Length: 405
Image (cartoon, rainbow, N blue to C red):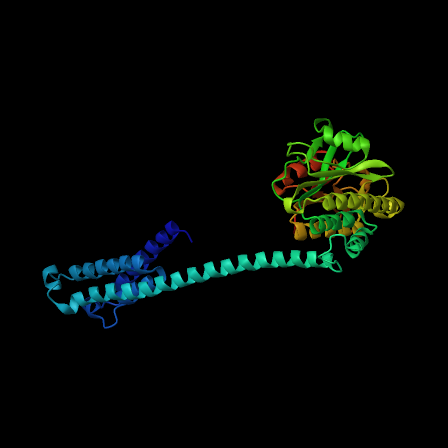
C-alpha cells in the first residue's frame, strides 16, 4: 500500500470512528458528563488501536485527534478550559492517549522493521539460491560432458572418443545443443554462434548464440563480410587475421552433401587456452560436426513425411514437442532466449496457412486443441509482438491470436 493511500485511509477511519464514538456515547446513550470520566475510555482504546496499526507518527496524530474530540465534548458540556488543565481527572486522559500511542506505535514500527529486514534476507536468500541452482545445473552438465576425460592430458584419446559419442545423434537440434557443450568444455570457448546460410549464399541467419558482448548481427549480408564469403567458397575453416574484432577467432563451414549450409563461429576465446592444440581440436570438431549434422539431416529427410503435415512445414505434435524440449534445454544450460507464440487455427486444411518464418524457426500443430505453435530461436522477447503481427497479417481469417482460458 503506497503512503498517500495509507494516509487517506487513516484519516477517513479516524474521522468515522471518532464521530461514531461521540454520537454513540454522548447523544444516543446519553452519558454526557460520564463520557469525560469513563474508566476505560473508548478514545483511549481507539487511539491505541490506530497507533498499533499505523505506527508512531500516525499514532501520535490519532492521539491528537482523540484529544481534540475529548476537549470538544468537555467544552460542549459547558466546562471551563482553564479548569481542564488544573484537574488531573481530565487531562490524565490526554496523557493516556499520547503514552499509549507512542508505546504501541513504537511496537508496530519495530515489528515493521523486523519484517522488512526478514523480507530482504529472504529475497537475498532466494537470489543466492537461484544463482547456486543455475550454477549447479551448469556444473552438472559440464561434469557429464567431462566424464571419462583424462584432465591432465590434452591429447586424451578418451576425451576425443567422448566428443565423437556426444555428436553421434540422428537429431539435428540435439547435435547443435551438444555441440555448444563440447566447444565450451573442451576448448573453453566464451562466445559461440551458429548461422544458417541460405541457398543463394547471400545471407546468414543466426540460429544459436551463447555468450555475452557479441559483435555479429543476427542477420548478416555475406557480401559485407568477405571473410565469410571466402570460407563458403573454399569450404575450409579460417581464423581471425588482423585487428577486425568483429570477425570470429575461428569460423568454419558446416557441410551437407558438399554444400555449405551453416557457419560455426568461435567469436571469443580465452587467451589462456588459445594454443596450436586448440586450433587443431577446432578443426577436428568442425569436421565431426559436419558429418553429424549431415547424417541427422539425411535421416530427417527420410522421415520428413512423418515429421511434417503433407505439403507444409508444420510439424506434428510429437516432433514439435521434441524440438521444444531441446530449446528449453538450451535456455536452461546456456541462457539462450527464444520466443514461443500460439495461434488459434480457423481452417481445417493447414496448407492454407502461409508462414513467413526464417529457416531456423519451427511450427507445430496440436490437432486436439487446433493450436499452432511457432518457435523463434535466438530471438529477444521484445520482438514478440512484431513477430505475432507479421504472422497474423499474412494469414488474415485463417489464424487468430490465442488466449489462455
